[in-house]
Image 1 (cartoon, one colour):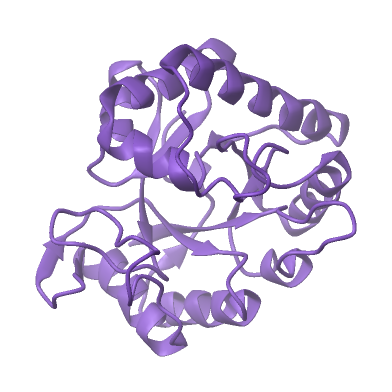
Image 2 (cartoon, rainbow, N blue to C red):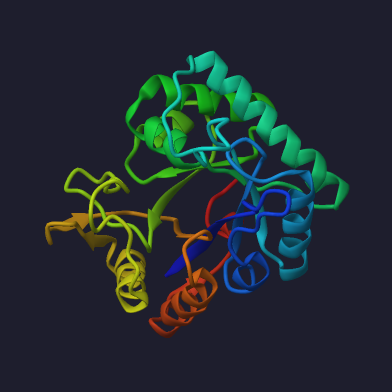
Length: 256
């Protein structure tokens, strides 16, 4: 059994830090780096890419709605073409910095509200897939397992990675429980580890209501902005490996 362990990172902005990327990137195998729209800035992007390179972590673009104040967690009224243009611009920004550091991008994973919107909105999902395809057909498109974004990526001929979450609870339909509702985020390390192992080993998880949900995933996400994320990442990796699950970079799981 193999699984990729990814994190959302590079989300500091100017003098305002968010998360402990230096510690977090010691334990994950793929990094989704904010591209300056919902969070991050050029200096933060460069610093994060360097850290990932030093630790042998795969680097991917993490484009979101252009909404710094809302951290990309608010739905913006953008047309599909506007979404596609924004995603291309964000990938390009990170690509330029990564290339200057001798690092090639492996994947693209939308952030926050854009990710959730594309999971259930075919037009938005197609716009993102179109943007990625226009940039490079070798980039892996990461999306919520079973979502419209995975379907759009496949239809566009992109390699896709089905994503699940160690620190979020699910609804019965396979969607993530809204952060506006109680119980959406898992704060207990042991609960997060148990969920990650169940996803990787049993291809299922428990919903907020306690029902069993079938869930096929190639990669498991841990949010870097959650307090204690670095410690949790270390526990997750250790727990997965102890359970006989090999934690490897996304490129070793998904053919490009």
